[in-house]
Image (cartoon, rainbow, N blue to C red; front, side, top):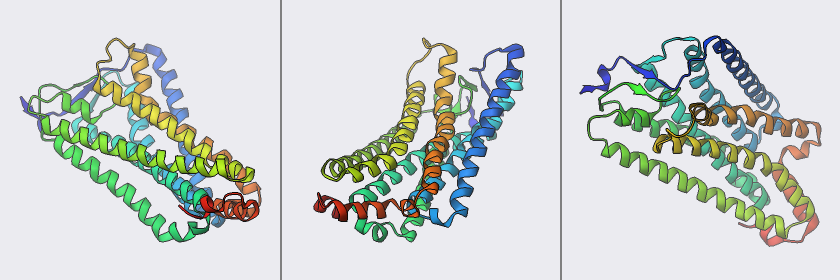
Length: 327
């Protein structure tokens, strides 16, 4: 038995012997990384430069795009080096650094999507109270809180994994993750398993519960409101639902692969499932929201504040004043 601090490197065994095709894979991954970085930076700049987009909805979007860049940077440079390398090893400090980046990305992504669903709930269900309940100070507090909680939670998780005594250094994946390190342990991992289970359960249950609640209230308003209200709700909620579904599927695949025996699944499929939640959301979210932002910038400036539109729709329609003005 040896302490993980004495392990100088880990070996990643999920990489295939692709021969000359590794240069093709390298080119494809470089292209994907360039697209992700360019698209996310472009939208961040658009939101920051255009003062008309300094609304809560777009501040949360900006935070989401920053997280996409953060998660991609935690994966792609490492992945590119491993594709070109004949020996797929990673030093222990770099492995734990990647674990920190990958897991904080996942936690921050989910938390950001939950906060965005709460923002849409206030804009649609409480349009007349929106600016009071979603002030600039509250937006800043929510963004700081979701980043701080993500960093703190993963720091505590890694602090439990780093001191473990390990019986090996083989990781059957294309990148490092916390549970793969825990499975290598010779020492008792009861505390790690309990903390991981509690953390995952609380995060998942609380996030899903809040999202379901907000969208149930939004659906109630849509069914009782005017046609204009329904159209505006659909236009603002559809990108969020698509990005939420995209990330949830990828996170589910990764969790299932980490917790269950997947040896019967072909190696290429396992690699795809491992990388899905780290590649597809950063690649698709700029497309989903970027198209929406382009339409918004080309339309009447009043559309830049969705809560104003819903307030106007409420005054004009007068079909469901109670549901639209109170929560």
